[in-house]
Image 1: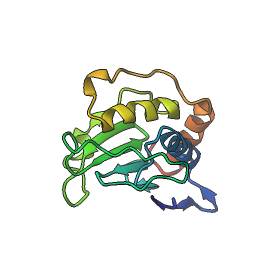
Image 2 (image 1 turned 180 degrees about the vertical axis):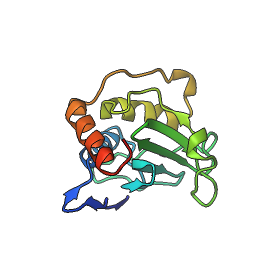
Image 3 (image 1 turned 90 degrees about the horizontal axis):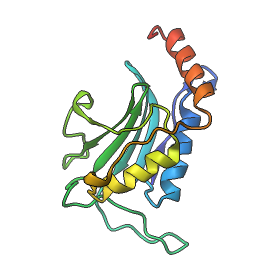
Length: 161
């Protein structure tokens, strides 16, 4: 697993870091640890990306084996992305780049600041290619109100709100 530390806004971490880390913890707990993940700030706003590639993972110390994308559905892998607009996913090409623009990405049917466990549960279905079982989740993260305020304030200071 590779993690790229997020940049800071001055001396403070970017406001979505706590949420991104909570989602990562939920993904790991669900057995779906990404091979790479990072959080940053792009021109359009804050983002967090989690990458999954088909490979033969080594068992963890507890004997469990991390989930990987079903190559029948995700030949080169899958990117799960969060932005201030919400969650989406995209297939990866052989160079591990998204096949589509994120504007064309498939939205994940969850709130913008969805409960991390709900995101992880839907991702497990995505990785397995079980698209017909994907419903929607409406539960927000318990810290969503505070997080939303921090993100909106950051966007305002950055001239995006």
